[in-house]
Image (spheres, rainbow, N blue to C red):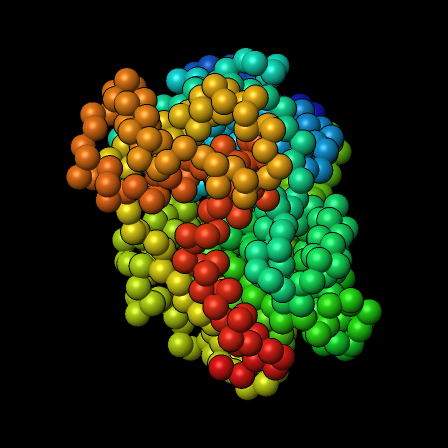
Length: 539
């Protein structure tokens, strides 16, 4: 006679059946009754483990390890937070970046660096956006339970403590090790804003958090008071955030009654259209929006809304392609399942979610790398466009769905000045280290300057900086190769001066210096100055 199932086994069966039901429903569209928690096959498997397996199992731990694997069969963004990590996640204050000054995206088993706080601990060490973290303090990330709470715990620590990150960098074969000195950072969701031209305001938005809309409107208002009539909104590297914030921001530029985004799901309760209310204060301003391959989610909602309404000129490279809407579901033990419940669609009807294959996580994780290999980031003709998904903007322009926002004006990734020498010093973090060393040596003089413009006028001559940097790099193991140093001269000088300006004068100083030689920014400025962004945009 079969023994009665213990309570823990009954609960385990229910959890497995419940999670399995998600997969069945996701793959086959089953809308019938919930899965039977007494399914004989599931019960038999757990019975066998309990009675016949070679080791005694802790079924609580087994279930915690199993749930992420089950959810992985749904989509790349559905995730699970156990009770301990969900508490950290819920209590994580908006805008407070983990102590190393970096924002991460976790796609299943891969930890990607989404963006870096300028002049923050990771920036100083030499970490770059797009890096994949493969080890933390020597421990392979394959051995780490990858939830945001777990990673947060590993990367956080007291000010002044250190953590070593080993990263894989696109286009570089070796694993790179960086020692990051922790220093807790309160990060604004707007990196910088300033008057970039006589009547053009520049705003760099790094996230869509709860406070972003207020910061955004404040920046727009201040720039308008300084004379800005046109705006350049930089969403490059912005991985998204709250959809509602993107809606509010787009509303500032649209007349009443215009669609911003719509949500569609097999469940009516999630479906909702969002339209502009006509109360936005910048409906007459000419606007250009910058995007790249790391612009995702809420960034794509904002850019798609303005593009489909022919309200803004989109400049840069194809965006990431995340069109899933997620909700957090708190389970009885306070753990959380972050589940994709709907898709969002731009005003023209596009879903910009790129393709993914169930159970093939590497297919999704490697998609950005494939863009590099395919040449899409360097050549407009290499853009992969799904010609079967053709849509029309409000005033008749053709746009495409199925894989990110395709810009109106393509700007290739800038490779000018990139040499093996530059790659070596950047990968070693020497540009950042030299700049901060320079700041410490000259801080008294630098802090007497009024702004970054005075710094640029009075900085030592470029030849002296290049020579001093080459000596610094040589002392840190990078042999001077002057042919390549001279080819990378402008790139090296721009990066060093920008880091110094950020340290002394703040983020506006950094952006102002970098943007002078930024092809995407300069292309957008040229388009704005030639009034290519006058509503309605027709080309």
